[in-house]
Image 1: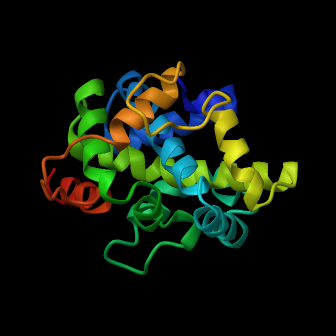
Image 2: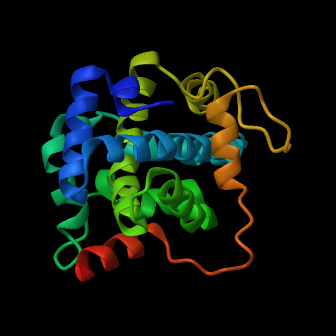
Length: 212
C-alpha cells in the first residue's frame, strides 16, 4: 500500500495525515487506510491523462502554472482552510482548487472512486470526499516539485508517474498488470457505474460538511 509517508517522507506525511484526520473528524488509522486506497486512483488518473500528448501538455502546463513551487506542501496546516474556507467566500487559490483538479484527474469516475474507497476504509462517503479533496492539491504540489527538481517536461511526466505507481503504466486491459497499485487504480477508474449520476467529489464533501 502507498501512503502519504511514502510520498512525502515520514514526518511530513504523518503531519499531512493528521491534518486530514482532523478535518474529517475520524481516527487517523482509518483515514490512513482511505488515503492508501485513494492515492493510487489519483496517481492512476494523472498517469492516464499523461498517456496522450494533449493530456501530458495540459498536465505539464497546470504543474508549471499552479504547482511549480510545491507551495501547498509548505502550508499543510492551512490546506483545509484554503480548500473548504472559500465555499461561501472567495474561490480557493488555483493550487488548492481541489474540485477543479479532481474534475481533470478523475472526470466521470469521481463518484465511483469515493464509493470504492468508502467501502474499503469504513468511512462515510462525505468523509472520503473530503480526504480526496485534500489529497489532490498535495499530489499536484509534490509532482510540481519533482518536475522542477528532475527537470521533467511534458514527455517525461508519464515516466515520473509510472515510477510512483511502481515503474509501470496503467493498463486498459482487464488482466492483472502484476502491480497491485496499478490494478487498484484501474479497477476504480474503470468501475461500471450502471449509468448512475453520482455527485462530483466537491459537491459530496460540501454537502457532508453542511449536514453533519
